[in-house]
Length: 217
Ligand SMILES: [Zn+2]
Ligand SMILES: [Zn+2]
Image 1 (cartoon, rainbow, N blue to C red):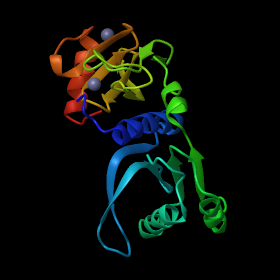
Image 2: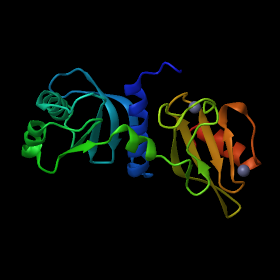
Image 3: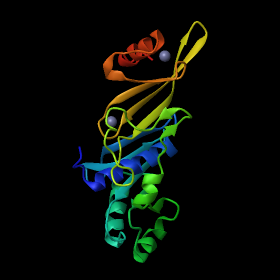
Image 4: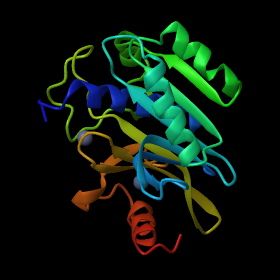
């Protein structure tokens, strides 16, 4: 795990930023997704794919030492057209060249270029979200150094509930970008639990997970 390449860790930070700003109950956000190109008819890898019912956004991370040039932009535009995305965002560690900026002017409000350096990326995540739920994975947070090593960031999905006798039990689910560990947050108990361990804060969280596993929610 210590040898995770820097570009991959940067991608985790960017994924966390966009997950947290785009996530809603109606939105699907996939990291390292694959979709089939309409023209190329082959599978295209997308760093972050954000999908609503009728709207598809693709986000690409560029961990480059130099500003992204026009060539880099054109390869993104090629993919943008191929997968028929509605909106595209290119995130670059060291910004964009002048010509790269000019190159996207034709796409006006459909392509956005965002310069996010490492410091800003690191400062973007909170240790707490939703008031009390941690953003960092318990399963793999043992040895990260803030600013140089990215911890296991949790991508939370909210909006889950279970009704028992007229009372709503609210849950959030998360998956760690680094180790893939899944955790459940029970709002009623205020407890975060590792899903794989079969330990439950209350009977409702157990019941909720059973329903979730059987896809009957
Ligand atoms: Zn983890
Ligand atoms: Zn509970």
